[in-house]
Image (tube, rainbow, N blue to C red):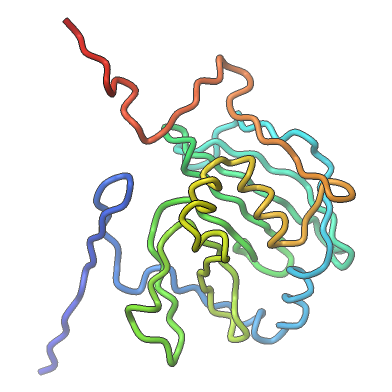
Length: 214
């Protein structure tokens, strides 16, 4: 009789403890492996967006985030539309995601940035376990075998640069550089959150911190 051991990992993030299965984040898509040059072209070719201001007001389907969806123009994306999705956590505006999606090629986003959340394990041969774990903030893309991997840029590895990129408007510029996306020429859009309200910024910090009640 064979015995099996199930390992359930618990890690602590900025939002408390989260329990995840050992093989979390392992997505593989054969169409990328079979069309890797096309996938690389999606990433490397210049992409354009027309929204000068991205307003984040609408709740997404999971009701925990605000969402904005903007059309993206790509020279080879003719048979279907490409989109930029911006998600911002409702109760913590420092937790945001940028996603590029081209559904006619891939059901999942083909490129993504996570400001916070799960630590991703890159399941790639030849990499030691302790080196395979990529904490947030990080980018997501796919390798030549169609396996989703997370990685950090030099700016994200630099503590000062990474701290500055907690600002969503600075971070969208970094995302646009990394994905070769622009507004026009070398311009970038501005992100505004909760423009249809008073617009109080929500962060992970306690709003009552350092306030004493008598």
